[in-house]
Length: 115
Image (tube, one colour):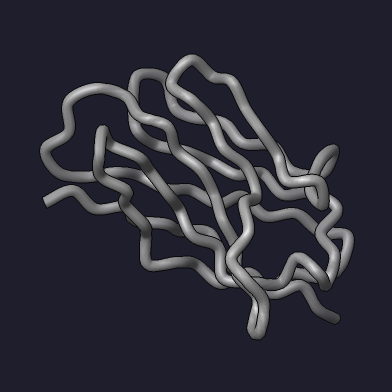
């Protein structure tokens, strides 16, 4: 059974930074595309950032220049460095991985940006 486990969510003040982590566990062979999505109450889930096994990245417009996605070498482990956080970044952040025909989601980690 393959699982994604996120960590790093917290309460942070506007302008602050957080680093989220997501690690895939279980019987996995190979490296796969991974991504971060987020969903705020009453809103649709949206793509934050994605990264391919070759390191190519893609970002949602609202986080470009503030967030950076990376992955551990030769592992299905992904990180999201979030800087200059704004209250609008508050949401549940979900890790995503596409493993061949399967799409996997983590359980989510809460990020709250507030005074």
